[in-house]
Image (tube, rainbow, N blue to C red; front, side):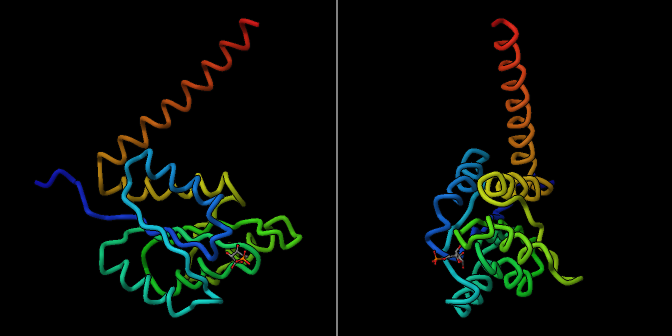
Length: 170
Ligand code: RP5
């Protein structure tokens, strides 16, 4: 019987280098949970051919989950979801379009039936959760990743309890 370890990885895509400061939060979570990942800038609108070829190549290499971040009329996650049957997580970003990221949220979440995008919150909280969710998905086939996710949850709970204990002492 195998130990459940796989070579699966997460592919992060973002529409612009202006998305990188927020998407650094995804990278940090995946690094912390020791989840292998790649990262690429490719735009559904500006470089659609690059998006197509990157999805095909990533699938060939063993990508198990795609994380796609974009702002404004955010079509990247939806376009990727139309090209793959791997799970796609969409991160809507506030790119200064004047709508606080709600433009990207609606563009990302309102997918037609049959082509799902698992959409997380706007901005940094969503970027973090995209990392956790991707790790949880990989964890269904890789017990070591699943265990690291569990330990991270326990550590987060312990930190809250510790903060409350410090507050009660004041
Ligand atoms: C989207 O347009 C990108 O994902 C980015 O969030 C937004 C603005 O891009 P830049 O004009 O900053 O390159 O496609």
